Image (cartoon, rainbow, N blue to C red; front, side, top):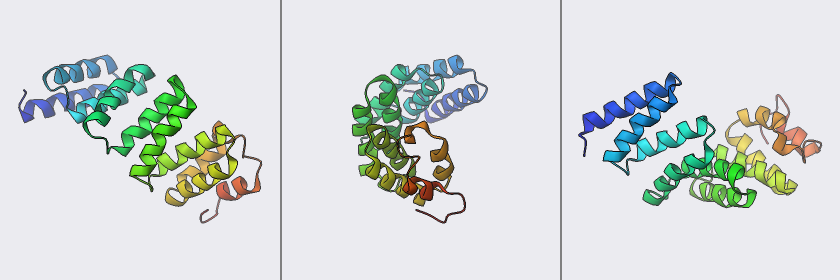
Length: 172
């Protein structure tokens, strides 16, 4: 097992490579660390993020799933997994996964926003708008994002959506 200094040095090196968009080098550094410490949560998380950045969604699933096995209370990891499942599995699996994030952190704006997206795609307009309103209430930047998000096509014409996403409004 590497000492703490070696571990931190490996993580910083991987982060530096990633910032330079040297993703293969970053992944190699993380893989070396994970070979020594297979359950290092930070290394697993960084590996998952890099794989997401590279569009390697199916590969990104494994490190995120391992994190959940080790620490099932990581709401932000469920958000990443739901995003992956929306692309490689099914909308239903994405919804099941994002709902776990919402259960763990009911005031996590990104989880509420993504669940709103998924409900809108399902045609569950009322639920989508309620969730979107909660997300915007917690983080105003989702107002502008929703206006350009194709997931909300089914509700963009509604007065409720227009009111939620109107520039200059104080909240939902």
